[in-house]
Length: 393
Image 1 (cartoon, helix red, strand yellow):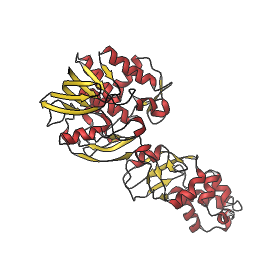
Image 2 (spheres, rainbow, N blue to C red; image 1 turned 135 degrees about the vertical axis):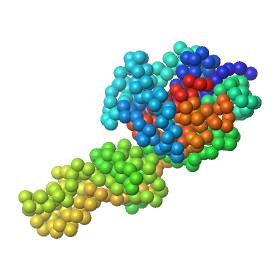
Image 3 (cartoon, one colour; image 1 turned 45 degrees about the vertical axis):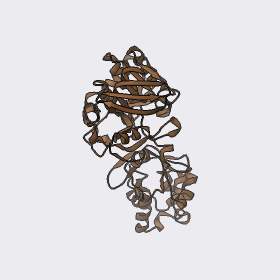
Image 4 (cartoon, rainbow, N blue to C red; image 1 turned 120 degrees about the horizontal axis):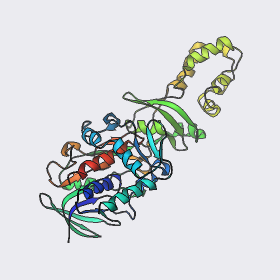
């Protein structure tokens, strides 16, 4: 049996940052992961360019049953700290939109940076390692059986992630460990995920597949202004992914396809200034023709503005400025970027990420009930929670 100081299960963003920080403190650290390569989600994130953080990180950008929990870690290891690390490694990056930071080149640069830091800190990483048993001997003493050896450690860190994108190796392992030690787990579901549509809506809208529109998407609780994308399965795009984390089954969402324009005012004004123009012609000046064709009755579109009553304008404007649609569901974990819910944060120290009732056991990253917005927020939670644990393990 190998005696070490710290065993981290999970070689993703949170696990690697935690390993770096613990290693820099002179701790003997081993990282295990059941995948064949480390950082798979890092590599595929941001379309292969890794949206590694955001300029505008704020605790209000995170969902949790304990909304105060994330504040401590986020304030002690900030986006600026991670940006400094990226700059230290001379990795070129840019702001894409809304504070979202991406590599100019490839995500691999971020992973290589983390692995280089691990190497400098003396961290050992063992892949293709399945953990079969975890046994608590006493406070700060654990025995772990794995396919890459047996370990005795003082600190055990679970950084195994959530359930999103199972093809990348996602598993319920972290939740099973939490259950073993009697921790509460909030129900999990897919977050930052495309919507699927009711059959009739899907049939109607599928011809719009590939069209993206700047839109304001809202429900009773929150709104997001970014692109939406019509797909052959339903609705996607940044604004849809954002609202999906705040959506509950059976709810409708309202989509303003013209967030800059009051269509009713435009139609009334156009009726005065260009009465013989066709309704369809005016609409196509503001909305893609294919969208107008789907949303507008053909016979109405061919009528002159002068021949249309204001009450009809109101109905037309509402279709585009306040389109109400009830999703059938989401695409689920298969395409979700994150997992909502997870280990109850009330059971965890917000300063150290240690389990309150199990000295020496830590949970970090996505396995906890902390979920960020789209745009680098979830990576920042991984860095911040990993850093917090890395100071004490």
